[in-house]
Image 1 (cartoon, rainbow, N blue to C red):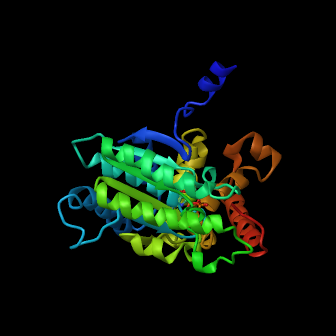
Image 2 (cartoon, rainbow, N blue to C red):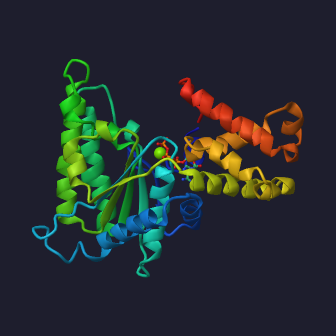
Image 3 (tube, rainbow, N blue to C red):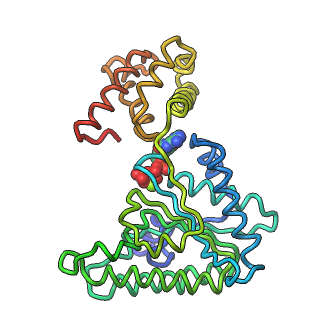
Length: 307
Ligand SMILES: Nc1ncnc2c1ncn2[C@@H]1O[C@H](COP(=O)(O)OP(=O)(O)OP(=O)(O)O)[C@@H](O)[C@H]1O
Ligand SMILES: [Mg+2]
């Protein structure tokens, strides 16, 4: 029985709070980076800031530039923040021929607990032991997804509604970030949040760069839609022809207001626009896509979840 558990869970020996650890570079993450349609200047800014972390930080005193090694991506759900963070980890590692980079992914919900003092202890252990050990072994990038869970805004907490434990967890994150910043210049945190207003101001202040990842504009909507249809075209060749249809631009315009995840899901909805199309997805038409985009937006406006 024990053996079975170990075989089923490849991460069984990972410390609490680390959902996944992998060596970088990892080409699958490179494909992820390329699949996210975003202003190339923003992508370049992210990559340059991440690179600087590993070139300059170890050489310049923190009294000159107090870098903490934290980049925060904020923006609406489904805009590609987590994908970008993973891709950025890969692209950063790829630029250093010395190698040895690792990516640790933190699962914040695994750290929180209603038991008094437990969250704070779990956070402190994760940062001061697991992450510090990894950083001592080689260049390390840590993905802190949904960081508002760990670094919740203390000023907005009522002590009745929120256990004091969460307050202490935020304190612990800040203390640990300061300690790690002093000792480990080859450590970079990539944090994401949908709720920047829920992230503690002292955490945001420690970020070396905060990047807002926006909803795609009309041009980006068209590129995401095209990327999705071209991808489907590998399995269903007729679908690859849709982007060259006359009405494609109108269809892309109908997607404005949807996030990247919702656009890709909307395409799936179009493939399911009738049982016949579901049976044979090559039957999907631009009109099906148009209708699905309109329905996704209507669902969103009426408060329904479109993604
Ligand atoms: N700008 C984009 N270009 C292409 N694809 C996108 C874009 N934004 C999102 N997607 C697609 O949407 C999916 C969700 O992306 P991801 O999980 O990275 O978003 P997120 O911002 O982290 O969402 P959440 O805030 O809900 O965690 C991915 O499959 C991704 O391919
Ligand atoms: Mg995410």
